[in-house]
Image (cartoon, rainbow, N blue to C red):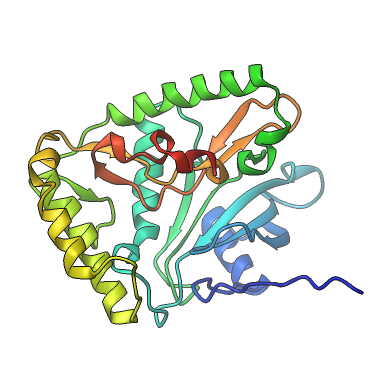
Length: 274
């Protein structure tokens, strides 16, 4: 029989049409900039992302070569999100600027920020990073290339974790900062549990039992006394590599970054290889 492809639509993604994208390009680069094409990037599940192919400058010989940028848009204001997902678009903007300033890790450059003047939600334009997802390419890479990539990623993570903040917690300006790691981590877990209770999610372990287990970790969490930058979502799907050489080309999706314990980094756990 004929195969059927199932398409899953994310409710958190804000649709953008060509006219809206053109207006944002004009705001960012001037009215002489031209939008050649717009393509939705569908790998992500939360914020909407679109690749915009543009030309800067005038027509004819005066025009600059075509270039690509990425438009990222927060969810529509009427879409319910988890507690920790509130305003994470601004967290990503802050994180990208911080990483570019403090490390040599290859991340996109923030080019323009729009505070919901053209779209119903905040958005920003950033440079386009070429490459393919490591999640889709890892199985095809030779061991030597993977070893080199792991060394490079380890060096960049060490640089990220050397960046320190004034308090613990999410980078989102809409979320509180805490003096201790137990308070910040406890809030993350507690708010996630409350989100689950409101949604009627049934877990294999009771909510009160989970809260009791969290309380028992206070002393261990308190050993972390310095708030360090943690990307938190650096699984293989957010790592881009050259499809031929396997060399690193860039990192994506810093919206869940936080100040906390580097051991929370996903590359230190089994999910880094999912």
